[in-house]
Length: 303
Image (cartoon, rainbow, N blue to C red):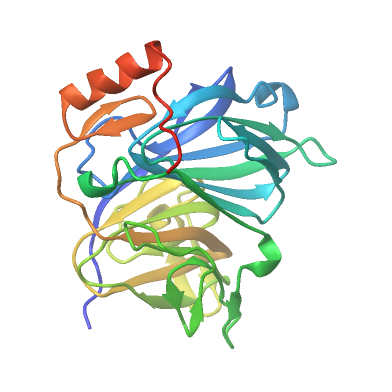
């Protein structure tokens, strides 16, 4: 067994999207090969309704899959195919845009005005760029959670892990999407397919991933459950960590434990032509998509 080295550590950056939603972008719109097959990860987390209620009005998607994971609050959605619904706290939606869809996503806060969730974009291979759109809406109660004897908790959203299979299936990238919590001071190792791209995104607490470079922090030592932990070496809130090759990911949790997304997928390794929410393989395909948006032929009839 080989522990995956950390090849990149960075912080999510404040970004304004939609009709004025304040969020943090972990990665996206730069090098599409960086996290192949994943293109973008947004962390939309706010305690002020005025920072998110304007939402994401009608916009197109083609050539990708979007994964929306809600932790607090809810998201109302609707599309050009007549689908509509609400994602509540703990729910997940995996949307395959395929040949094209127009939709809107309108976040709502919880009783305290809080909203928190993630949206991940996964690329589609050229053979599936123009597949028929589809949704998979999953309620939080249907997402299995595995609790280890040491208190580690893993929600299995997509893929198979520790004897549990996530409820979302049939995804082109054949991904593993886990929501992981490791208790304070615990060192924990998680298996990852050697041939998959993999990254972690920390959103609560802090932890030290194998040979992770220090992103900065408080200059002091703390003893956590008998282990010395240098706070400077911990990856904390809104940190993304990309891993190199190997078949295991190891994390040492900090003084408050650590909660993170652990995501991996099969690289596509195809050319990427990208304009906003439309991701194709060539500039000619992008121009065609834009022309279809202008002449109202973007949505393909169902067969």
